[in-house]
Each structure stands twice: as C-alpha cells, then as structure tokens.
Image (cartoon, rainbow, N blue to C red):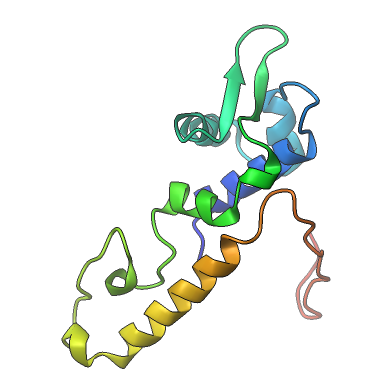
Length: 147
C-alpha cells in the first residue's frame, strides 16, 4: 500500500497541477482543500522542492507551484520520490533491494518472480500517467460509507 506521505504528496501535487500557471498557492489553501495536516504538508512540499517538482516563493504573495508542467510529472516519479520503490516486497525493489526474511533463496522463489513482473507492469503504467491526465472518479464501494 502507498504510505500516507505518498498519498498526501500526490494530492498536494494534483492540487498544484489544477492551479498550474495561476501563481503560487498558499500552504494553508492546499492543506485545507486536500485535508492534509499543515505541518506534514510543510515537510512534504520541502521534499518536493528538493526533488525539483515544486518551486517555493516566500513573502506575502508567496506559496508553492509546480516547477514543471503537469505533463512532465509522472505518478511513478512522485511515488519513487516519496516511497523510494514501486516494489511490494523488498526482494523486488530495483534500487533498495533487500533479501526477504524467512523466505526461499531468491533463485527458487516464484513469489519474487511474480512481484518483479508486477513491479515492472505497475511502473510502466505509472510512468505513462502524468498530473495532466484526467483520472476518472469512481463511486465508493457499496458497503463503505462516503467521506
């Protein structure tokens, strides 16, 4: 599952994509609109600035805005920046590879093979979709309360 930090990061960047070329957006505006705790959002946006996805402007008319066009920011980039890997298990991570505890040797593990395939398919999909692409809103599942 995506971490809370990654989900907040995506929502904050989606918000900035919606306001692309309208000038800097104040932190409080993003926090309120996206229901993200202000302190957590400060940390996230600082990380996005260091990662080159967001620009920060200080002062009365300051705030945050995308450093790149929404067309040039892919969901895969955001997830890698915040989570470090698209792999669901440590042995399938490309950059943060670790041997799984209590597992078979990697050369014998079919689960690892499946997870490598899944990682590559998910990466290919997430690297195709940018912040500029429309995303269809789906209704909640019937047994879940809204909100």
